[in-house]
Amino acid sequence: MEIAIIAHDGKKAEMVQFLNEWKEVLLQKQISLISTGTTGKKVKKAGFEVTRLLSGPLGGDAQIAARVAEGKCNMVLFFRDPLEKHPHEPDVLMLLRICDVHDVPLATNPATAELLMRGLTL
Image (cartoon, rainbow, N blue to C red; front, side, top):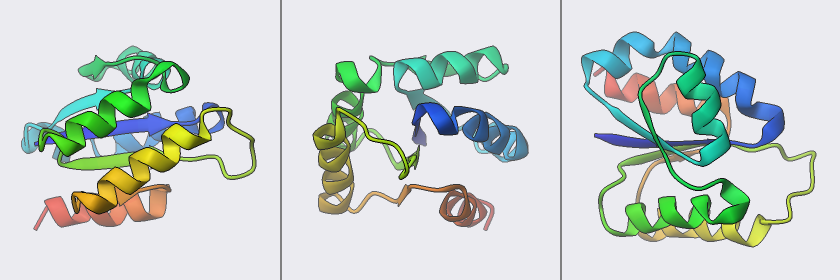
């Protein structure tokens, strides 16, 4: 199973903390992680194996959307910062739309991500 992880700048530490809390499940289920560039850099520094794509504003969101459309990515965890402006918002909306089109689970906050991860333990 492949899970994409993305976090806006103000949410990257929260993403690392979330992954640390779910580390055992990620290892048990042999889940491979892909991420946008900067998020992946932080996650890798925390000790996780992750395939880094481009930074979100440089096309990383689009790369993840393509993997969703190709059926390669099974879940997206995207910790968005709703209080900040993001110049690549059209790319973000495209990714959200592609997840809906292809019926891929998408969490945009830690509470929803936790529910999705709990589903993996059943």
